[in-house]
Length: 380
Image (cartoon, rainbow, N blue to C red; front, side, top):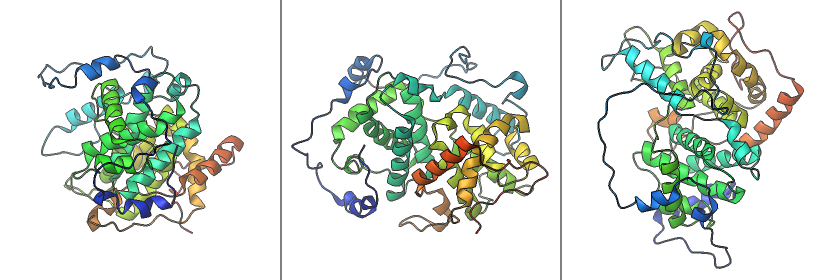
């Protein structure tokens, strides 16, 4: 996989003004993504390009989840995720209906680290490197955090539908997932030429477009998951609200939010984060910053439902505690009140390696509980 490192920021400054296609390298072996992937019914994707999609209204049905699939973890009934809605009263809908739909959506958008078993040539660290690179690209183009987390979700779910994907295809899949996510989330997404540019000529625009069709078909065009960062933002918003506050109007401090997202960023780079549902992952992050009873109130999750994830997250908290505190950054054409929503990059791979050593040795602190003072990362 080609990684741009420190030169990515400098070279990308000229990307928006480029005209025409990126110059092709004559000595590069042409990659044919359609022949590399074992995607079911790929031919149907190509045959259906010219056929317009028609949205048909159908009665709402209960979501059916295949609990027998070994790649999908279901919590015991005692830890059911469908609990009374913690949402406050909202003027544009029923809190109960909104909450149930959010939880059901998460249960229907399946992700699992078992996809690694389907791809013998791919190692967990390759996924970490890819996501770290996508975080870097996201910062260069000032993409929102939600865009990066959508791309991560698309990638993990897509890989779960495939078999025997070769490692030299990961960058193409990753940048295509980010391209799709940007078109879903950004008001002004990067151009196709810009996405091809950051691969340093490894992949061409046409290859990204071909891969886009493959991914969309494999995901059945289901592109609106509740991501880990969207859950985290909702939880923190509710925890910061005053009586009669507007749920859609930001209430939380930006500085505290970026400390939380830094922990979440580091955690998702680890393949074991896929053992947990996104809302559990987000609630576990929050438990390292806010009192336990507050987290229970805003997430609707009991201590037992999050304790396993909190324990797993402890070495990441320990590692970040040794780093300097994250700071808000200024971005061109980004309003001050929106800075915290822009994805930023840090030396996550070094942190991930250090946290991995602590995870193996078991040298990490006891997770906070209701009687302990909440943790604040990077305060020294």
